[in-house]
Image 1: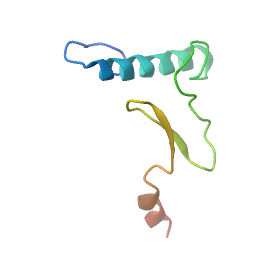
Image 2: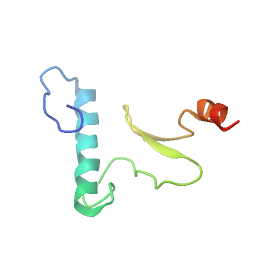
Image 3: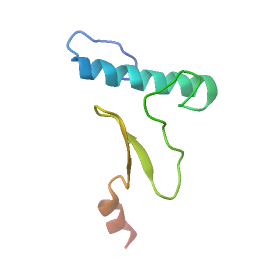
Image 4: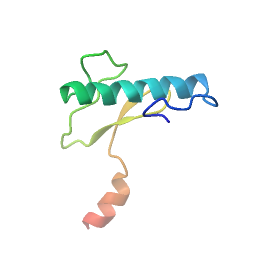
Length: 77
């Protein structure tokens, strides 16, 4: 429901904002292969790099680094 805005009956305002943002990123990507354009988005989705940045879908949406880093480091050793 978040990605396709399909059932908003029980969503809060926060849920609707997150859902609209997710749908915008996905439709932007489908149109241009870039989730950040052509429709403006609240936070620029970072390109994949060595610093392991990712978009964290909460309210507010934010960029974070090192998703599950300690767990991944365990498997790297």
